[in-house]
Length: 144
Length: 378
Image (cartoon, rainbow over the protein chains, first blue to last red):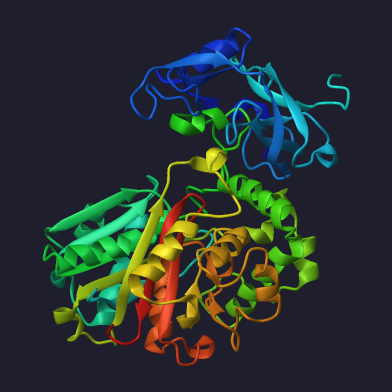
């Protein structure tokens, strides 16, 4: 039995009216998240209205943050990425508890909880026709 | 509450049933009815929970020759709904809307739809869409992510998780219904293959095909059935939509809220429990929920299991059937079967002596609940 190439069956996100601003911004090369107009609170996943019914908008975030937690996927249980690979939950600098998931482009033994990372926007897998944030470790001097 | 489990039924658990979920559900329901000494015509309610992977109560009732039901309920969801399924059935009975309700779960969890493995191209809608690009869409990865945070915060280790897997396996060894019955050592646990670090394969539930049915009835019916009734003392849930990424503190689960709610509602404490059937989709679920329900402090679960406090002769016997980790993954309803067996005193070689009260938890992560059952009428 020939196993399919992992990337050929990668899961596909389905944008909706609430999330279109997020995916559209990524397509244009920026990382924007949903934000309450009145309070400035970031809301992720995005919503049509804030919890109290107020207006929201999509605003760019820095993409910088810290590794809140991470896993090293060694068994191919989901198609898409060649094992082993690292998935991180990244807490963004903008707000406590505001977190994104993404592939961390680093060797598994280099990743630590609390490590500084920054987002890089790209195709999740070869052939993907959309962009998503991935994360790379910041060097001590801030860039590589 | 004045409802009881009056009948329990199940199929064999296997890797490939070769059967429909309808047929397995019908077999488990017939067994529960025979156990109680009742017939299909005594049943006027049926309820299940599923992920579009199982037969609806309308189909199963038809297979049992039941012409119509007063209540035919199918909830979309997972193990987080099990305690709620039982409590809602009891509420229906106590409200006078049903006389006797069959709650079942039937799945080809190994040969059919597997929760932990994706082998087709999925299109992910809703809140999960943001995790699709990284493939962060299956339970073993979600819970490994949470376990890592616990390790970071409290210094818990692979050995701590290993003690949970090893203790539960030791309970499964004498259980003829369990699928995993070989004695497990720390060395063999640590040598088992990685799924998603920090989880090894032995941190994960053993997916199987099979079905369990639990028959509930009110006091008037329960006093006339064939087995000793096992009484529902109380139930509590906590269901949050915070998800796997935004949940504030993954070192705690739903149980940090549902636990105190349950103890407050029943006036009981963890020390009163003789048996604890802890929902164990993963070893880490047992760790976090044991802490949350108050059996021990944060970061102490490894020692709690390692020192024998979670087995015979200890504080409480956790998953005497082996749990989902070793008996098999019937999505948590097999925990209720085991609790009933233990409180009747019918668990044979693995009987917990003088078992009077059992905690049965359901679910993990942001959502779940628990029931307490009693041998004596509460």
